[in-house]
Length: 100
Image (cartoon, rainbow, N blue to C red; front, side):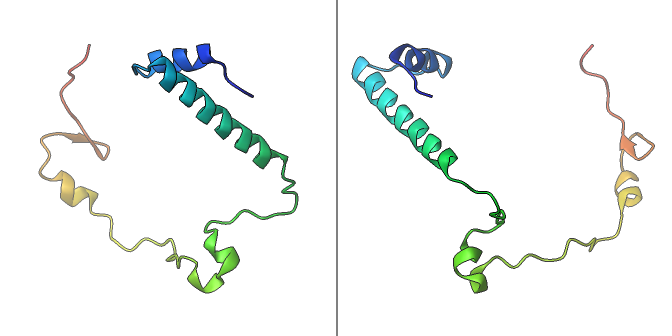
């Protein structure tokens, strides 16, 4: 995939950017370079490669982020918090309607 100058100008309008012709040419080159890199990355065969949550762990397993267990550590205090609310129903806060 590659862009042409009209695509860059359209993107600039959508992003509300004012680009000079020189800046538009530079932007076109940079964007096409990014797309070329993406195409190179797509060409790599990754069959059988498991995804990593932390890429550094592939090189240095001792430096991988240490994640805590996903367990509840706080009690459910919804009722305590809702005691001060002006209106609640079924565990939800009721607020005045502001949009018709």
